[in-house]
Length: 236
Image 1 (cartoon, rainbow, N blue to C red):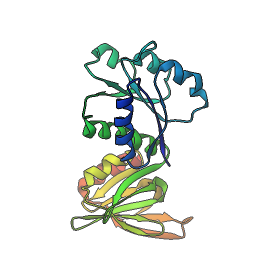
Image 2 (tube, rainbow, N blue to C red):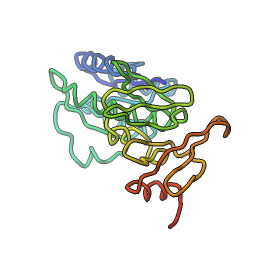
Image 3 (cartoon, rainbow, N blue to C red):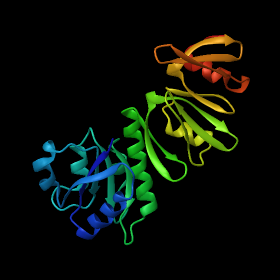
């Protein structure tokens, strides 16, 4: 799944900088650039996009006016100077304000775009992870049974394979995964709670998949039991 992006900016050099930065971000692409809000809104109903990067100081219809008309889209506002705080906080859809300079603060811009990408992918049932030795891969959340730690390494276990990730710790992985769907159950395991089947005894659980034909047994440690029980709605 690709996160489709449009750019509205009347400065050609800014458009080039933004396009170059986005081209280096996995699973994000620019599908259109526009030099004014008026030009963009002539065609925007025909565009299928997820993220809009808007220059605050557009001629005519400015960035905030554009943003007000895009209530169902993610927006990153770009500006060469500070945007008034009341305007920056006005719309929930404005997820970040990036100061445009030469050169672009690429690290901050990339972080903001990746945040949008990861949020949208999670909403649609996907997560992006770095895979050993040096690749990036999308996983469907429903494919993941659990994630296990093997010494300092983390492995994603799906119904069909076991995939070694690059160097994540468990907190980093939990930040990437929907809290309602994934739970840490021990020092070495995060599980997809949709596959929880039953307790075997006080500290062991069974995960079942493939229409209950296959199962895996894992241990729940005392440290993580309460959180796990709360997510399952189990009362003491």
